[in-house]
Amino acid sequence: MSSDITRLTLTGVAAAIRRKKLSSVEVTRACIAEAERVQPRINCFIALEADEALKAAKRADLALRRGAKLGALHGVPLAHKDMYYRAGMISSGGSKILRDYRPSVTATVVERLYGAGAVWLGRLNMAEFAANPTGHNEHWGHCRNPWHPDHITGGSSSGSGAALAARTCFGSLGSDTGGSVRGPAAFCGVTGLKPTYGRVSRFGILPRAWSLDCVGPLARTAADCARLLRVIAGEDARDATSAAEPVPDYERDLKRTIKGLRIGVPTAYFYDGATEEVKAAMRASLDVFRSLGARVIEVAPPDVQRLLALGTLINQSEASAIHSRWMQTRPQDYSAVFRGRIEAGFFVPATRYLEAVMLRSRLLDEFVQAVFAKVDLLHTPVTPAPAPTIAATDAKTAGDVLRLLGAITRNMRPLSYLGIPAASVPAGFSKGGLPLSMQLAGRPFSEALILRAAHAYQSVTDWHTRVPPLCSD
Amino acid sequence: MREKLTPNTIRGYAREVANVSVPEERAAEIAPEVEALNSAVLDTAARLDLNDEPGQFPLALARNRYLRGKTR
Image 1 (cartoon, rainbow over the protein chains, first blue to last red):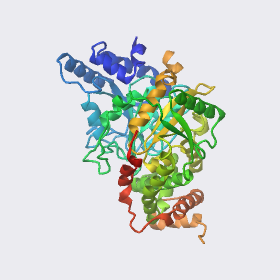
Image 2: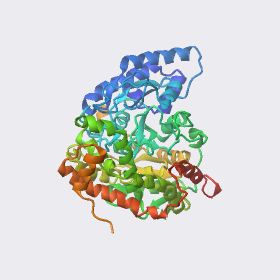
Image 3: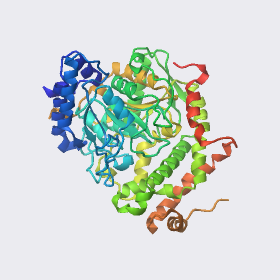
Image 4: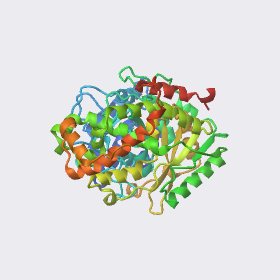
């Protein structure tokens, strides 16, 4: 049955293809069948490229039969937020303005994924220009949560979260400027990682805010994210901000113990407004870590609210510069929600913007000293509540946008300002059947440790293996 | 003492500098938002040193990887 195939993990299906237990064509057909079945209900794809995907799968199977050298993702179908450029192919950015945009370059991460043998399944839904934390999109239709289609997916990588939860693909690239990987991963019950700023090349992706944008993987497990990150991470001469730090073998590191790991629980900010269900899920997840030999320690993060404001100022200033020309000439082609996200940036003086950028180094030093001198990882809820309904979050005014933003992304954006890595890991369900997730953050370039802790947690829990009812209909 | 940022200032700046159109009711929403963002920076900027510069952030990321000379 195709659902037996699509319920495998990325690493599981890659191994099955490599051992010739499954062909890439079988796997790709199964994904296409699932995608076609769920698309009318959750609208996770902007374009399902079935014919091209099957051709690529056939080439992958032929290469395997010929004994060719295989990459780490050989024959595995992936689909991505519609903002990863392929030369000559449409990349809409979830917008009306770029509906027919065909970039002239291919993103470095796309080259790396497909150089490793992956099969491109299609372009996924996303928030307009990656600028909405809910998953609403008035140009391409709202993306809907596979766990309950009346609820939001989170954004801006809405299609990535939904497509993975609905078992239509095995991995996906999102992008995270202020929570756009972690939010959809949390609301859809999959695993997502925002790497350290500079860990993954940004060349050839639609910009949202250059100083904050991070390319990150979403998949169903931490081990799957480790595989994807290993492929895409590393220095890139075409991205001036990419880091020269060596790329560890993230998968090998998963096997190490977390005994003695110090997990920090914040004494302030991150639990403000959290529901009792979320608090209970977080307590239970900490108990799991204790049972695995970790120590749970309280820490006091310094002035997180300020980090949130400074990150927002950078985000809005850079976005207003990116969109300045079209905001002058085609304002009617943006949604009101998008305009509300960036307009304040036009009125921030360059002096204040540069000060906010300069302060990052000092505030990172302070945060690391206050938190990561005492603990190895910081543990928080990703969001204070499970995914709200689409109706309740349908912003009509810019003021609505700000209120929604505050509620959904408040635990993620401060960490984006600091540039540190953070993962969203499924950690339970609400009474209404919606996923609840924890955020694990670490020092710069500590992705291996974050993934190891998440993997250890997933080795003794099953939240990440649960399948939305939609997949069994 | 800082004066309150007004919707009129926003509308004037929008017309005269930013070259974008901002309706009156929207200017009333933007003014407090911008004021809050600017204040957050102004209240923190005293910590900056003459030799701080924007391009230092990647170095800060790199040095904070090696807290206390070891990684787990």
